[in-house]
Amino acid sequence: MTVPEITLNDGHSIPQLGFGLFRVDVDETQRIAELAIEAGYRHFDDAKIYGNEEGLGRAIAASGLPREDFFITTKLWQDDQGREAPHRAIDASLERLGLDYVDLYLIHWPHPSDGLAADTWLAFEEIRDAGRARSIGVSNFREVDLAELARRSSTVPAVNQIELHPRFQQRPLRAEQEGRGIRTEAWGPLGHGRYAAGELPEVVAIGEAHGVSGAQVVLRWLLQEGVIVFPKSSTAARIRENFDVFGFELSDAELATIRGLDDGTRVGRDPAEN
Ligand code: NAD
Image (cartoon, rainbow, N blue to C red):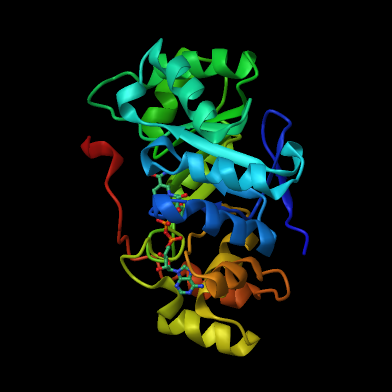
């Protein structure tokens, strides 16, 4: 199964489907990442705060696959924001991952109360220039945060990773990102464990029409909308199921039905509130 690649604004490309590592148990991470590699995933979305970079690094090393086959993202936590601290933070992440570079490094949250995001971004440019990250981007940035970065730097983030699932689709922010050349990554695509997006009745009905699960419908919907997505599961069968989303196509009417499910329900924290 070939995962489509998306070209980022810096010319690098990213596999559109990956595997998320939030709440993957530290002691289980290597085994679960190995299951994902075996299922075909090569794009992994990690973060310092998930505490499991070492396990992912061990799975990559044990795979015997060349480094270039993987696309590895990690994220800078807010206690490392600033003009200098990001340099230490990326070195520590790379050490834990056992890698010389990450493919994508993200500012995890804007944390507006600290006002350090734009300074952090200047450090991110240096990290990219030093080859420690191929691409740099942001996560949970609002329109106002993106505007502030644009005021301080000419480097446009490659991606903004935002909460995005059927009940919270963030259309205005996504349109703004598209205008700036920033690709959208979805976190919590299946409901972030707070609700089961694949069990919404409209989604289940679409799944029945195609002989696939509701979770597969939701992932397929995001892929057809051009969004980059990396569901998390710790169960072998679901890890495989979530990768098996290229054998069917949703119609325009089905896409419209899912678009109609947005009721503004946020399941994660509001970036404005910290
Ligand atoms: P998700 O929406 O991927 O949901 C994961 C949960 O959905 C699992 O725990 C499981 O209970 C369920 N699930 C998985 N596959 C299923 C299937 N096939 N059928 C039924 N249920 C299934 O939530 P997530 O982990 O929060 O988001 C995905 C990734 O996004 C994370 O692992 C992480 O990499 C990233 N993320 C980033 C941020 C951020 O602030 N940038 C926040 C949250 C998550």
